[in-house]
Image (tube, rainbow, N blue to C red; front, top):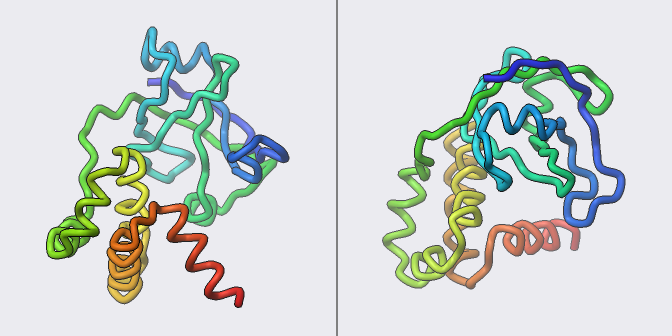
Length: 170
């Protein structure tokens, strides 16, 4: 387990990570957590008082890692870029659990299910995490339907989000 304080940062220009809000985890801290590992791995713990689990530590190429802070995490923390955050993390070896309602609906749609199974594990998890992030049953239902439809059209998570955003912008 590692404990430290850090500043919340945001990438101005970093390829696909441009605009991401994140905290840094130095190479030294990452090696204390998971010695010898240079690839992404999952952590659990607390960011201030916010409990986290199955959160990715992502390598950024210089030996250091980041923990991305999505909009929901920032809202729950009540913090943004430039604020200080207390971090207590450890390696999370628990298995990821897909949203059971999503999986049940997915198995009823063979084409969507086949495309879902062709995706990498991390891309499959995007769908489930997005559905789990819904605050009420109506939003959860809408997200499941949207995901099944996108998968039926052989879209991945990013394509689904872009297609939905285009529809709202037009």
